[in-house]
Length: 115
Image 1 (tube, rainbow, N blue to C red):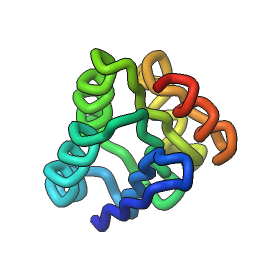
Image 2 (tube, rainbow, N blue to C red):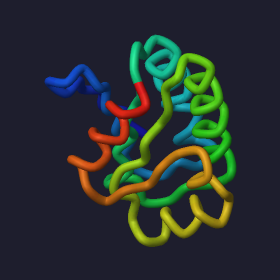
Image 3 (tube, helix red, strand yellow):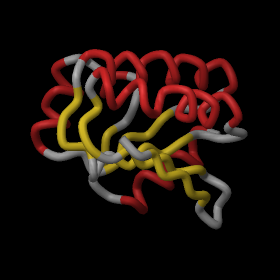
């Protein structure tokens, strides 16, 4: 599973995993994802538009990294999950600590407002 990282002109970092966020997918991106989250000087946007499936291990990746951002006054914004992925995120309660939005401008606004 590839993980693309880019920085918006506002300084917000966007992480974009692609493929299945199952055991193998999580193992493939976990170190880089965590390093990016821990090194972030602001909130993060995680673009889920290319994620086709998410398992509990993928949810754990989000829980642990969102938790590490919180003491610094930052948070993780989840952008454009598919309907199936969004349903899993909401059932697991991820939306209670990571806002979910389908709009990139809204995601950036939320990220900037949290920092």
